[in-house]
Length: 355
Image (cartoon, rainbow, N blue to C red; front, top):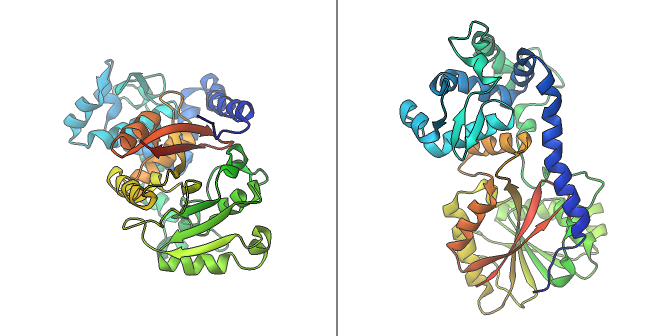
């Protein structure tokens, strides 16, 4: 099979460097006093809230000096097992607790300072730092706005979709994929995404059909006027619809259905609905599916990806998936995972073709 991966060596080096980055970022903290490390985590909002939750749930005391399964903790605290695992996984990525084997956790040097029995514990400091009066400024309410000017609201700080790809805007991240193999890309779910411009710049012969709901299409048409449209040489078209109901019909085997940071915001059930709609849209053509999204590693999880996953957990039913989770999802469809292409970002491209 002809690969769609371009610049494989450079992109693979980027992936390796990114993995080591998360290791090196944590390295200095191993030489800091545990109190300093915990204070640093407590000053970051999402990390702080996770740490606060761990204290409230008494996770450290439940682990004590043993290796304990997620199932045991969840049962003890009447918690959702899968959601608890994602929370513990994020805490481990920040250096709090240790995952000694899959879904089995233990205390480490940092988390032992959360034990009630530890006379040097920092429980009270964390509880005080996260009390309601201190957290209020992060929320959009009248009280938090009093006396504050020129300050971004929490809406400005929330995770977006395609505009937040964790990439250097000076680099065309999508050059790592061979877009020239296709004549038409149906881009669904991110009508205003700047990634569309990067895709168009990757090859001169590609056309893109932006497919989204009526409100998004109206916004997209305004967004792509002026300077944006000049850059694209008017290779954009627009089609209105609901990807949970249907997708545009394929016209050749060189069509590509592209979903950029869409599936991470969806449950498995909704993701399967879209893929089944894609099967109908492709019909007898051997068109291709490209899912551009985060693929979590089994080990060495980047804290930013882990915290982003918690944001998804709190915001909706979405999640960042490991490669195994992606494979389980795809196996429930009539597609196979043909390739995982590397990009110079935290995302990869999962290439799906009909079985």
